[in-house]
Length: 133
Image (cartoon, rainbow, N blue to C red; front, top):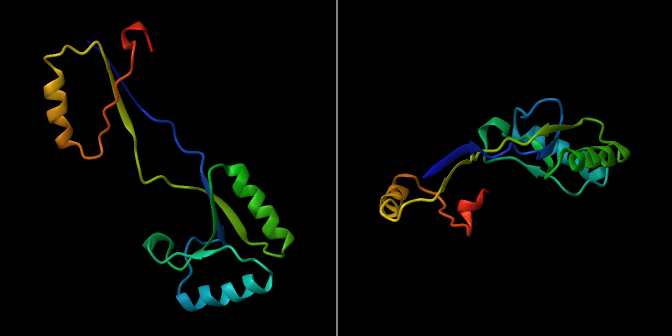
């Protein structure tokens, strides 16, 4: 049996926030900023209420790449929003993988039993695993 383990690559995702700080002190200040955004014809935003680290911050977009976030930042600057900042998007999900090749049939039931101890575990089988891969 051959075993290989590792971590999946880090995400390149990014988000655009308004202001230099991640969170605004109050909902009232966030609402005042929303009025400014609306008057600048910005119509895509979200006031964060479900994450204490960013409470009342104004999210101006989540993007799969930093380039996409930078593009949004530039478009906002053309509308007069000069304090939009780009930050890497934090992933709350760590992925660890374990790849086993040539697993003996007698071991498979035990591996299946172990899955109960690791919620969210995926089991995948691949053809021709013994040919390198």
